[in-house]
Length: 71
Image 1 (cartoon, rainbow, N blue to C red):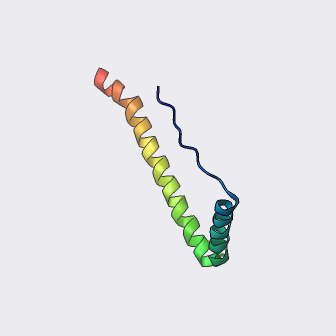
Image 2 (tube, rainbow, N blue to C red; image 1 turned 60 degrees about the horizontal axis):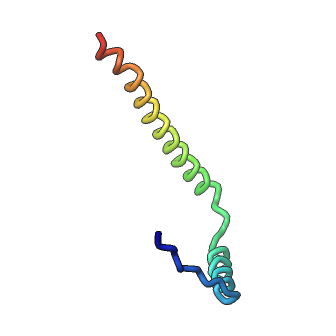
Image 3 (cartoon, rainbow, N blue to C red; image 1 turned 135 degrees about the horizontal axis):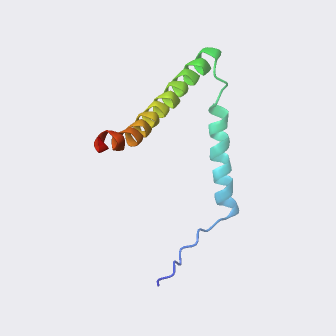
């Protein structure tokens, strides 16, 4: 078996670069307005309901289909 010789080199400089990049992104962020938050919450809720509905339909098909085929 071939052993991997790749080892990431973690240095103080590379860690500093990552921290600076993260801080730069955090400086750009802001708190969403109430309207933005409600819109995002509605979209997420619709997505959750859609996934649940698809799962329920699959469940019903897999439990009822064998009964329909057996008749």
